[in-house]
Structure formats: structure tokens, C-alpha cells
Image (cartoon, rainbow, N blue to C red; front, side, top):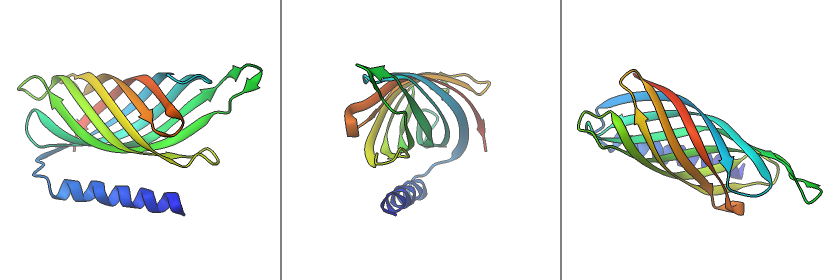
Length: 165
């Protein structure tokens, strides 16, 4: 019940942000994340996400991202580290370096990571990224996503496709 309340509060805050922003265009992106954990005990991270993006101008957007990320545990010192999964819900700012609103961009997001593994709880989540958005809708990016609980994080390649709504 506690996690559902936090999730609801985060969703309400994100919706409030959009209604107070003069966002003109909306885009939806769906992506796959393949990552290398920066924490011992995990061998690989894989995830999927959906990103709703509100354009404030041609060069600045407000993205809201939600998805699922799964860390695969490995054996460390004879002990099997269990897998770990969480649902990231985050919002941020995306800035394109080209005046056309495509090409190279920088992205910063913060939010919450809702652990789905028993006893994992909720963590503060932060995620800086750089990427390249092609005019065809293909979006390739490299990001770091870190969770405050357990100092868990990973560097990931995000392969996505975006389209206008």
C-alpha cells in the first residue's frame, strides 16, 4: 500500500507538471535498455521503457519515462546474489544541441525506482544521458541510471523508436 501511494503521488506530480507547462507537441518513444551494472553482484541489466515527451520549444522538451529494469544476479564469493527488479518513474529536461530539435541531445531525469523484489522498497532515482535522435524516429542514447538504495546503478544503451501523437 505504501508503494502504491508513492507511485500515485509521483504520477499526480508529473501530470501537474504537464498542465502547467506550455508544451506544444507530444511524442511517444518506446525503448529497450541494455546495461552493464556498476555494482558488484550483478552481471547484466535489461529493461524496457516508454517515454512521453512534451516539447516546450524546438530545442527543449520535458520527458516523463516509466518502464521496468531487471538486474541479473551472479555468484560472488560462493554466494548467489538474487536478481533485482524495479519500476523507474522519472521526469526531466531534454535539450537538443541543434536548432532543428533533432540530432545530438543531453537529458537529465530524476524520479523514483519502485522495487518489485521482495523487501526492496522505493529509491530516489537519477539518470543523466546523451543521445542522438534521427529524423526517422530512431533514438540511440547512452545513460547512467542510479538508485540511492544500495548504491545500485548501471550504464546502458537505449535503443528506441519515437513518433508524434
